[in-house]
Amino acid sequence: MSLSAAAGGGRWVAGEMRPVRSTVAFANPWMQVRSDDFVREDGSGGTYGVVDKPDFALVVAEQDGLFHLVEQFRYPIRRRSLEFPMGGWPPGKGGTALELAQAELAEETGLTATGWRHLGRLYEAPGFCSQGFDVFHATGLTPGPHAREETEADMEHRAVDEGELRRLIRSGGIVDATTITAYGLLLLER
Image (cartoon, rainbow, N blue to C red; front, side):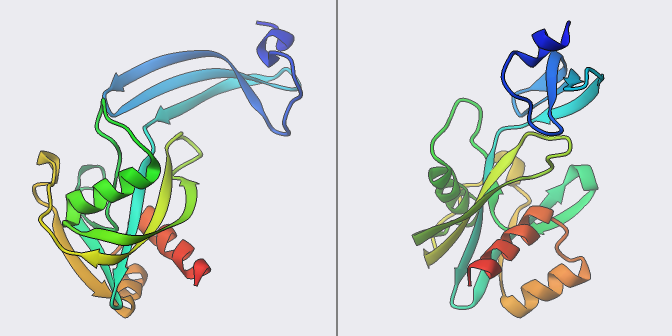
């Protein structure tokens, strides 16, 4: 394919790589892995591997000086992981980012919240994955029954004060980058 055909007209953005062909290597209801051939403005090209996953929402749930976390076994890292509640819509369902955050908090912890503040929108691993996520701060919490999915059967909910949260981050007790980043966004808002 020629550069002009690949460019599709329009102006180039500095460092842009425009796709000329995309091949799906693997797909299931939760993700897709593809290989994209691309071309740069100077005509050179290459191949890029991309993981496409649906976006998710993450909730920093805080009340009375306590932060609510969940812990579960994460197969890719072969260990349990302590994290803020988070997740995406199941296949066939959808809604706003806020609705997703509200659903995930209730599903994983049983908590509902009266106060919701959007802290930001980020991308989990933009070097190889298209998945984005919205971070919300939830306050005015009320406990209730959780409604965890079958894959979350081993999940445990616990609340820690901010000193313990920081100790867990510093000691490697929390290794989830999205949780640590979400806490950073909260600190920037204070």
